[in-house]
Image 1: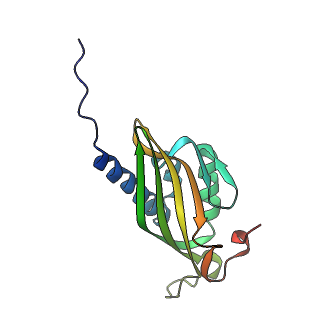
Image 2: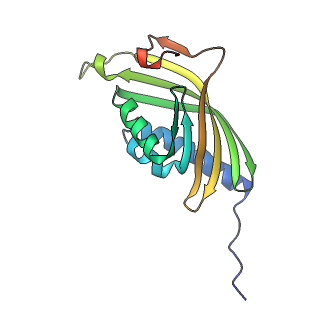
Length: 161
């Protein structure tokens, strides 16, 4: 007879782990560790849709973040109103995000300047419990309201197509 499995995580534990995963995503992006996102935040077969086309799988997600983040001197992603719905080893979450962006081509090293633009939207995530913990299987960024709310001027690469 095999030993009984350890205690299963509670719903509160799962919600906490998912909220920590979402915060870890923001930390990795804002700290310049975007190369770790595919392994630490997403499933291997994940799909990410930030409104710039879908990025499918770890390699595409790595490439897309490398290309996108090279355009910024810095970012700051702030999450709020996180809602998690659990369904066994799957979950859905919705988190509002305010994302501040400083463009690299407007950089003036050593100066204090306002963010070049701020975007308000929501991350709509489908998550899956993996052996390493909860991971995002599908992420969709959607603006809050009828369009992207941006303070400042959006660069051409972010304009709706």
